[in-house]
Length: 352
Ligand code: MRU
Image 1 (cartoon, rainbow, N blue to C red):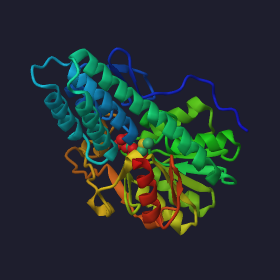
Image 2 (image 1 turned 120 degrees about the horizontal axis):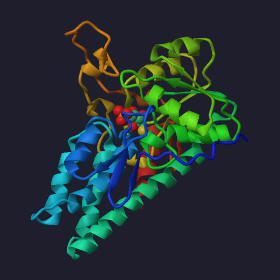
Image 3 (image 1 turned 90 degrees about the horizontal axis):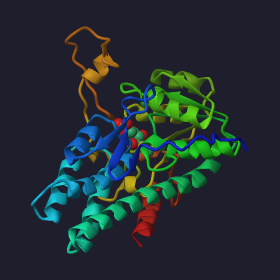
Image 4 (image 1 turned 60 degrees about the vertical axis):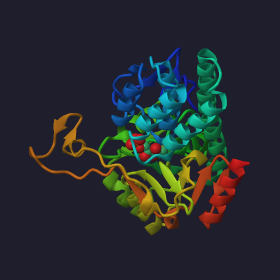
């Protein structure tokens, strides 16, 4: 057993008589909390990645529906919330947790929309808090199911940030890794820096430092060299959307890691709650992949690194085909290939 740090848990968002977000664009240098007063402010915060990571975006959007009710409006509440949901849904296309939370919020509201305004607002807030707490429990379950997969695999690699900063609880991929570290099986984490926005360098390294888990930062292009030298025992990443046949959209660069993992016989695990599964999609090619401004590639932390006027291409996500996934770690257990029937069973269990 290893000791994990007793420092207060990291959380990307909280409700303190209103929604507050830890501005992740300022990490790791500054911890700045943003007060979100309007749906427009929340939409802007999601677009610029002040709050990010699939489950965290879903939770922020759930609270955003309460923010919508708190804004002055003479429209009917269902229409106000529907307009807010449409606005929030348009912020980022890839993480399906956003759609999942917004649809669930509107269904919840429909069941108590006739209540007086104050009571209706409290019921919607209670629903959002429950969704948040539920994610905490699901993270813990994922960690418990996934950690045994890392037994005897001391050097684990992760890409992007799928930790506490990306969820309501201890994280998906990082939750599994932290639990395996606590059990004494993981000794060190390889952290891909995750160009262009450096979620690995800025956020995952910060979280692992906070937890007291040994880690080393590498550039994304080093993964193949490390694997060829036998320095990586397993990969665990998160996901933004998983189709019913097990194709996985995640941060750009994930696909390359998966191909390299297969080439070198390294197990490639994806940890994600069932809210990340899209029951309406089978083929990963149909997942909408966000494209972001080229300036994120031509500049680093605001400083240009390419000749002025250089054109860049900046897809923010890629799709790893199911065939490259060793197993999916969910709150309902580890889903093994063949993934289609395993995913169908897990989703059916969730609906019961
Ligand atoms: O663009 P981001 O930072 O929101 O991308 C995040 C990722 O790709 C994560 O791996 C994914 O959302 C899973 S987070 C538990």
